[in-house]
Image 1 (cartoon, helix red, strand yellow):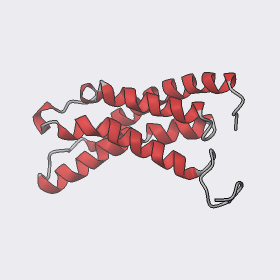
Image 2: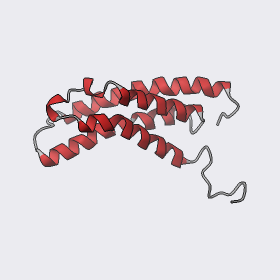
Image 3: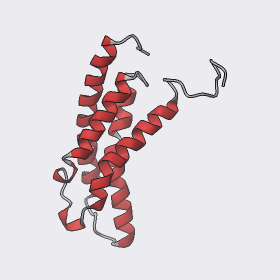
Length: 135
């Protein structure tokens, strides 16, 4: 591999943001997807390690300067409603009528994702300001 090769992933490659999104999605969804339907209540079901993972992923993505603040914030925040949407779709196929209030579920998940992600992205921005790797 030659230095400066355009086929390699550098710090500003969109592939890193996709990887960050997928890590946050699995982080928030892993526990949430395993809960029984009777135990799922939003927002309480999302509290815990999943939202911490979203914040940490946003912090790391911003601290490493993968993209601008708003891009990291919104992309990582989108992982939370995507995790909820995945569960809604799976349960709607297997048990129709279980998620009659799905727009409200997605709105609550989006709000929680935005809050967790903005906290992480702000902290990551502070780390980025202290480094020399600003985008």
